[in-house]
Image (cartoon, rainbow, N blue to C red; front, side, top):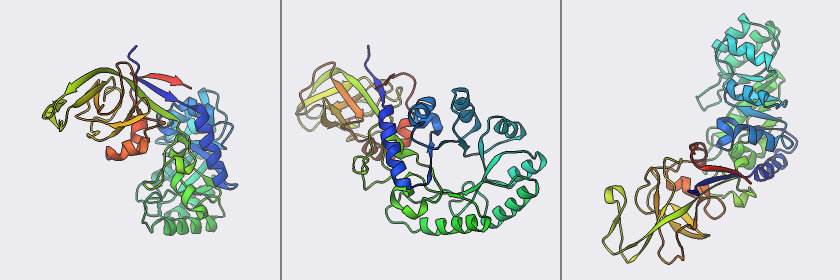
Length: 353
């Protein structure tokens, strides 16, 4: 067997959810499990977290339907709401909570009235989805006139995970003002805000990345936040090559040896979901010993520096997990852990531990 595998740890998901519950300090906790549970598996994440959270958040109705088909009866919030009348009717049939973020959705609801739990999404400065506060107040009146009173107000922070930022407090103040005027509960805190800004917790929090053992911050690790590793990527050494100064490695000859040494060939590549753009120097570990990538990542293989490391053919190489922080790999690649988790393909063996 090739030995390239992804380990998923439901116990770690539960540990991280308990951490979120403590931080929420009485607010409802809705676990974001969109994008196939951040690459962990949609229904696996839901089953693991079911006893630890008050509900779930997904992006689209198809994800919500899959959860209902799986037997999940907990409340489900659909963050992008409905796209047409058919989805609106399906949302009612599935007893979902739908986000209303655009005037066209308000108009569609007015034309198709009926019972449905609606959360008004505010644009408080991110300028992605959401109604401007004045439009949101008008929308609430329009929906109330059609006997469809919203059950809550929500927004999303643009910079809660940035080290030096001054946007979260104004966003929270604006969202809180609208929620207070409407007399409705507020939901705004993502993982970063839940950890960093206690005053944003309000009545419902929506943790995402922290549930999956990754830190939302560049300056603080998941371990420092008491988060457990829930996703581990490993493979095996399939060849070891002796090299001399001046020898190059991989496509494009982008890495050149400056001393005699050994290069390990690892049975994992971008065909497995490892990022092709991972540069030389990206961390990895062999039998728990830290090392780094050298040369370009290929479709089925990558290469690592074995200088000073005892290693043999068949030994395990951790690409991220217990010894190699996924956030450090992500930073080396100029991306975030969310993308690394979500881009794993179907080729690696998937093991639930």
